[in-house]
Image 1 (cartoon, rainbow, N blue to C red):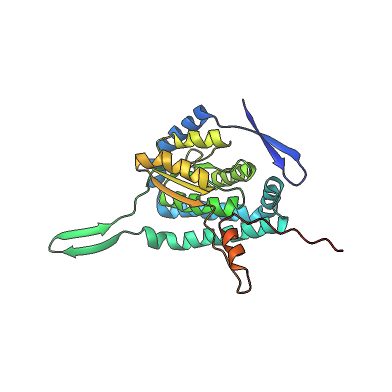
Image 2: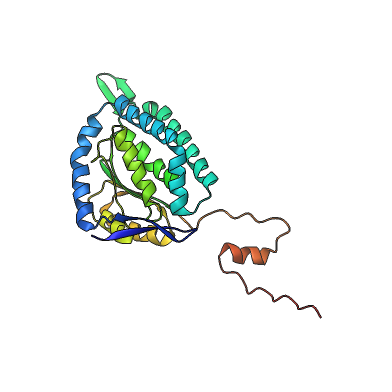
Length: 265
């Protein structure tokens, strides 16, 4: 069995070694998730919401320990990790507050014996490859509403935030989410590619442009619902006193050669 080394980037200390999900393991988890999803979708929304509410409570109760885990494996300052988790709690509150209103059936026409309605149904089985720098906040933007909607989720955290991903799964299961409905996949690129090889109904990714292009090339021909949040498209702020030529080069990540400082005579 191959193991993933979890390294503290601040100390280069080996924190843990986690079993990697190879192609066969990913396929098994995907099939179990596919089989478990209909029963989860048939679970009343109120019960799904109660599970997420309990999950939120577990996160809040264990916030300091979860922040330490995140700091150990990502190198974020401990205060930043705590802030992320507090922000995550607020995001969960938002999804819980909005779920019933968004998911309710909307009647758009009812006249002369004809009734037309808009109903929201889960996609089915969705994959989520998340980012290392905000593992809880970025991952939660997908798996929390995904689970509330009635989807099953295959969640692959970044290999640099794997322990946080396992903690998410543990707390979700303790909160009542069936183990096969939310499965954490541990590994790097090979595990991610194994996830892409499954018959998914939706794929969500946050990360680099290059990986996003690869995922789009794989999933596009299948017409799978795909959402990408990629690096390389952040806004730039140019102050009024900046050198416009230097600012343009900086925005393109192609800085001109810096002039050498003159040595004092």
